[in-house]
Image 1 (cartoon, one colour):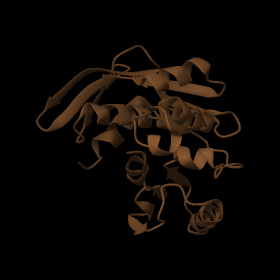
Image 2 (image 1 turned 90 degrees about the vertical axis):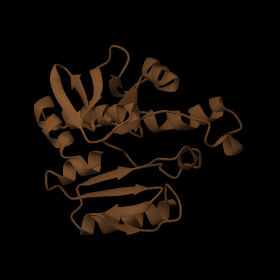
Image 3 (image 1 turned 135 degrees about the vertical axis):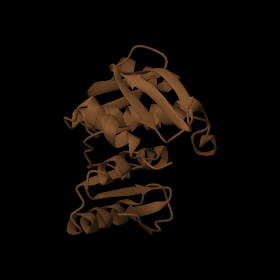
Image 4 (image 1 turned 120 degrees about the vertical axis):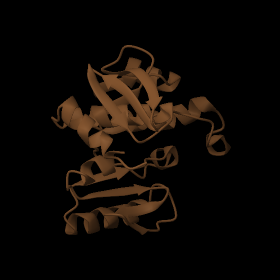
Length: 203
């Protein structure tokens, strides 16, 4: 969502994650969600050479546990949810949560953007020591989606009294858009401008 929003503003972006590294729509394989440190820093250097200003990265709990991201300060870190994906490695949800929590420490990010609809997001919110923005589709938060409805193959809702219309269906996509709203608001964009950009996202 975020990469497409910024691409629609003619900003150069890159994504590092499960699908490899995607630069202006071109994909390069990496073999893992979060590359090992040497490979990761080579990638950052290449992106800088290409004039990329915005990098969106999937940060795995494995990478945090193995200290692959030590020394990297993120402008923002978004927490969406925690599900039983990697218990073969972590053993139980508590260990998994403790590993993920490392992403939201003051030495790792300047801003934490948290989904407080998720029980672990709520726990993070209660103990956070960084600057924080919360989002929700069910309860009061910094950015709350209300009047959610699907009409004419579009998902419509309101945030702060501003009407949003998105080509992305499913309530989880409302949550993803709210995370993008938090990020863009922190960059100084108005809700009205963000709503315009969200409507341009392709299905």
